[in-house]
Image (tube, rainbow, N blue to C red; front, side, top):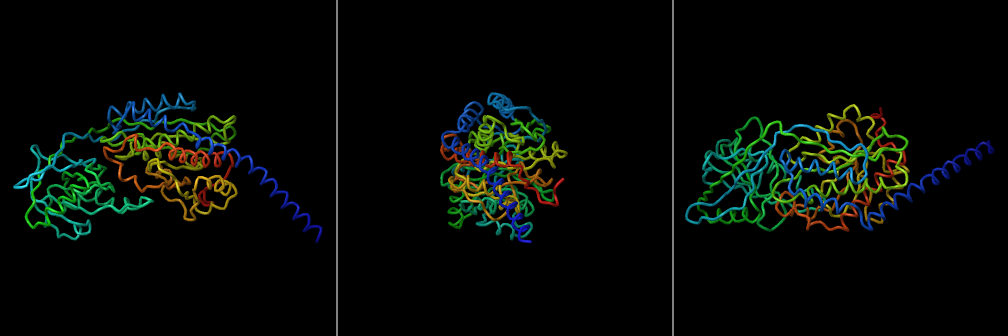
Length: 464
């Protein structure tokens, strides 16, 4: 018995030694990728090229077509394999001239941006007394019919948070507010921008009309203009606003997901899908939302592509073509449904370029040896592995997650992100290159560890 126990212990020790020996080259290469990124990654030049040569890239626009062509050329120039586009169609929304003003005895201009998908106002605009609500809950509490003939205004402020949860909490104000106001009889809808800035730049974003309410025109007020209306209403006199929004839609507009790969040396049919979204809103040049995410994931994959030997598994980078008005994630998931069982991991970078501070992994995987190796590589970047499991991954990969693909969530410092996104301030000068390189370092290390280690991140019940 003692001999058997000794033999068993020896086998365990030998297996542990083998595992440790295998883990060390993995850790060394992941750390080398990390350090190379920190020394100056390829990401910033990619972002500079995109924002300078293309600028704003609304989905369905001529600029988005140029962005697609840019993406193909850039991936080829960087040495990726299997570079191609995957076309799909969307209903594109096109912004026209817009204006808003307080009328009456104290006339003044209001800084606004129409919400993506909004219907236009009638020719000549719409003018009416406003019904102002300090919170969205107050609007929802208003009786049906109580806003007949009025412009509903919600001035609730979004809360600044490091993890961006303030945006999620406030999102219904923009997404659903127009339909809720319309149900109560409003002829138009204005909301305080979902933003944490204190300047006079409004932030746009998409809305969702519900089928049980009329479609009314809707726009976002700058933070300071929303506060101005608060003060005007506090004076106790009726406030009238004239709103003019011109827009139109283009059905079946072309859009594209742009794809490039680092083909795996041993298991090319096992795939890691990462990326960012190539489209942007029109006021700025889409630097942090989401040119940065495109550049970060391309930069990470480029470093892996430049290794003397590719990792075992394939790394696929996708520049998703229509995230802001939806469409690209759904199109990608539909096109790759048969491949989903062979996609070993996915994730999207779509929260700017400020530092990553935590990583959420698929449930039950944090203690796997490869993930422990990854945690050690990430520690010098001041990134910890969260014990809570990953859930979201990004709008463009939700479709894959619903098909059972494991997902990671890299959490970035979003403290200032919502000062900028969806506004005219979303420009290249807001990106700090060393902070962006920290993101590239984190993505390169993670992707390489998963691609080279054969780690299985899929729950047992979901394995093909």
